[in-house]
Image (cartoon, rainbow, N blue to C red; front, side):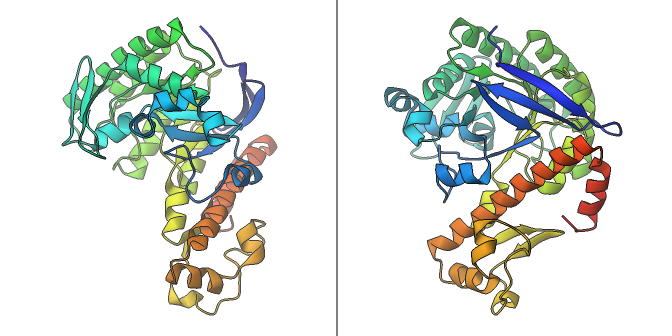
Length: 372
């Protein structure tokens, strides 16, 4: 089985499950915990690859379902793979699109062989099997690829969640077999499903670990369950995952959730939240969010956040940013996105530093007081 060049845990916290580590991917080191900005269509909305590098991004996420539909995985392969196609030279992780297909509840049909669905773009019919998804992601040329899985809504019955988790494991086995036949430069992670039921999460985790993957992801969270249930399932499930493999919490990116998940043993995160919030005029500040469109900012000469070193905060006032949003200038979305991604990258860096210093609980207390 092809493995990552390496993953090593470097520092463990004595009072929680928090840890720092390094993923070595094709000779390039990625420090963990790590946040991956989302570029669903192979572009992080409103900003360039060069700006992402300046912000410190080491790996970004794209979606195989969307790229399969547009422009097509074969076109990306023909044009040299996703790195050459996009100009992004660092890491790429592709989600299989299982969650996106799950969201098309009225347009898809799940059976043992795979998923039949109608495109959300033009209604055209498609069928994807686990093996086909692996091939699509290989064509795309991502560094880390995710297998086809089934996400269930909250609430869902135990029986429905059990059937989805069972099929997810079966598809993981088929995905590994397809990937092992021709792994190329990709690395395949396994996904743990099971909704908010501990017995299902345990069973799915144990069987997926038995199949064997270089990394493991927790899927099907942040889909409607309350925070306490999400934290409980994270804490419970990481107990069944190997210490020497990275753990990835899919689709979670609020600062408070990242911190809580890191303290429960998670290493990798992705979310559209920072970029989506930015385009809606909501930016991260200590203690919560600032809505730039609000009238209270009309004459405010302060930056979004005093002391922030991002390009936006070192050059522009809240008043100017509010003006840009009110006039729907494209620059507004770019500047807010730069701030939010800078904030989340710096926040994760602070988490890594706190783990190394043995002060993660102090960081949590400062965060709770609205100081970070």
